[in-house]
Length: 218
Image: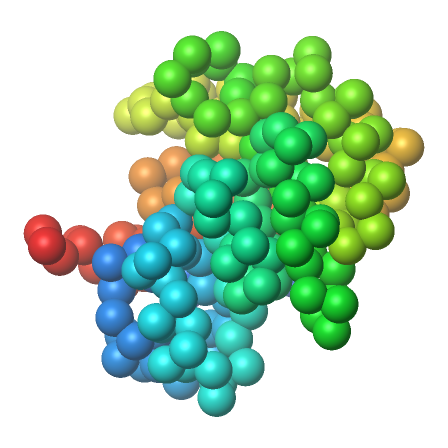
């Protein structure tokens, strides 16, 4: 994507260190196939029931599937079975279920922990002060592999305000990766704030409308 490449260059980032996750929520299998033909291999889905038919339809493409929606306890078995990555783990109980339900024939599930940086009570994510014990618990689960942190900050049009939570997340990752060296992913930045995310060290951008165009209304 040319826009991403230009932002990477502006902020002195190495192109190979910023990857694109195509958010295919409300996109159909044909659109995913078209995107895959252009070289995109990693796709993110928010809703399990919508995702499963697309994963099955596109199985021949060997795509990498990321679950980026809120995890419901009764859906963990299907997430553990069908996805390669999960970005939204924020409770040890959910991590334990994903671990126990991960099929033995599959490699460990790659996990990013979602952090709630602004303290909004209606928002998913672990508070920063509870991150260390959560990571310690997850690190003992053999079918999961800690890979990084994710956040979804409140929307803002001001790029300087956009940068603040991304700075916080980058600082948290730098601190916790001392004890958890497999954690090297900053899953942050979407279509409306990817410039700020790239500036602050994002390694994985979650882009939907900026890649596919406006989502269908229904």
